[in-house]
Image (cartoon, rainbow, N blue to C red):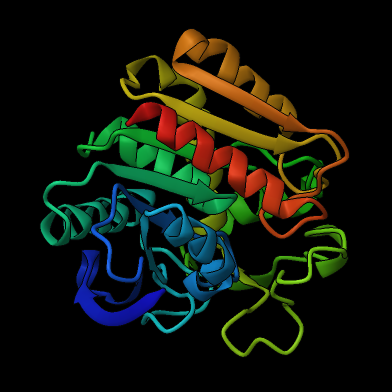
Length: 278
């Protein structure tokens, strides 16, 4: 597998860090644009890219604003529209670099929310949409008083950072040898700002209400033991989309299905679905 990296200017002047993986000595049959979740970065998907390139596909992953090696306050997005625009920009980069290859947009967790809203609001030219444990709603009820206060403060202190409170043990079960640990990863963080939380929360509800606008085949994957994002919200989305959506529920699966026990099988399911769309 070959790797290259570059930088581009995204929405609101963000300096976005991007990396690409390509098959050795082979024209890519498709390109997968990866949008990561809160507190992580694109290089945590290098093992996913390895399986994609073995299947003859290329992968491009950005670091979202406030994440990884991109600029911006940690855990902060200017707006969901800006994040969706950055995702659409990566799709255009893929189309420019691989003009003859179909493009898929793949978002995990917060990135699933961003990818879905990108597809709904901006309608980039993609062959299919892949949503992995999308953050449409949380799997737990946030503290009511803290949420009420946050809604008041976001108007005056949108960049106020809070801890996500995520426990790395809730991300994935051990057993998949190539799964990248969060501990010790200098490009991972546990920050989220009031603006980010507000934008993603409201954007999830908007997407659930407006998903009838979606016009591309969608693969929706969620683990039944996800403690972070709501599988019920994913089921609601899938039911609303009907035949356009293929839902795959991983029994006992945790939040990061691509890193979870049995992660390789999950990634291969995703690759199989994409091949059926070609």
